[in-house]
View: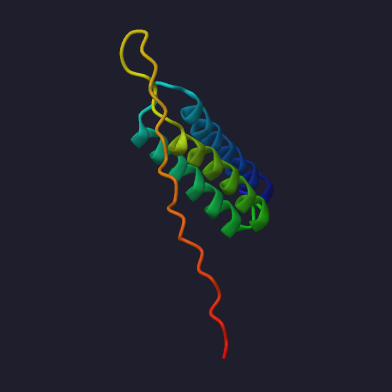
Length: 108
């Protein structure tokens, strides 16, 4: 098997795994564990392709970063409202306590 065929097969596999991971993140019915497994498989495939020289290391890093950024958005997103017609109340963050300003000490 020559290198061009191997490279084409590896690139195809990487693309397929990345697309599957992205679709799992955009579908509401996918579970957290499925998303994690698919993202991990895609990252492993990107690392393998970069190690074999099929993809440039920066290209693989860029794709992994995009995938992880999309996953991070899901982790930060608020959970869906539960119940009929009820909206979830936004969580209020506690304001940081301000320290009282001290007057500068006079020098003698």
